[in-house]
Every structure is written in C-alpha cells, then in structure tokens.
Length: 116
Image (tube, rainbow, N blue to C red; front, side):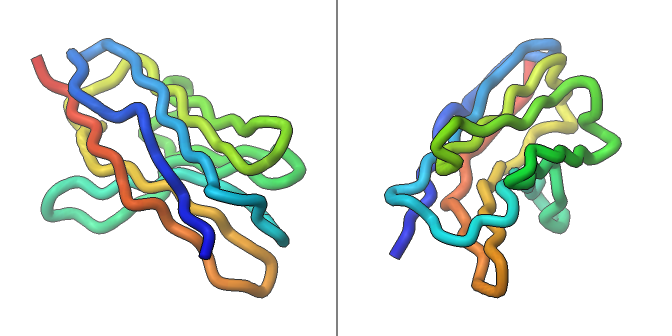
C-alpha cells in the first residue's frame, strides 16, 4: 500500500510563506495527476491546485498568483509553495494522487494556520 507523507505545514503570519511537500512511500504506477486540496473547519474539502503528468497546472481562483504547484523529476513528490498567505488559507491541506482507472491516494493532511 502506498502512503503519501506530507510535511511543511505550520503556523505563519499573514503575508508569510510556506512550502508543503508530499512524498510517496514508493513509486506509483499510472499517475494521471497530483494535487493539493484543503479543508477548513466547517467547510467542504476544496481543490487548491493540481499538476498533470504533462505538467499542466490548475489553481483555485482564490490562490492564483500566490501558490505554485510543482513536482520532482521522479514524479513521486509534489510541492505546494504558498506565498502571501492570508488567514482564509487556514485549513488542513491534503495531498492527492489521481491514477488512470485506479483509485486515488490521499495523504493524512497537514495543518496550515495563518494568524498574527
């Protein structure tokens, strides 16, 4: 069973930056895309950003221009660089791997808190 291990969350002041990482415990076959989702208290989980195997990226309107998704050359690690963070970015951030014709993988989540 593949595990996605997230890191990089924490407490940051408004306007600050964080970089989230998500590494797969072993190589994943059939990756279509990797991405990040987030869930704030009392809200539904929402898409933050995705990157396909062809490096096409998609961002939620709320994070465009502030967040950047990228992946390493192995394709098994995905990053989310978050700049100009706002209190409304506070949430648990989840890593996701979509596969062709197979079930997704999800990480356990990492807390990001933006507060002064």
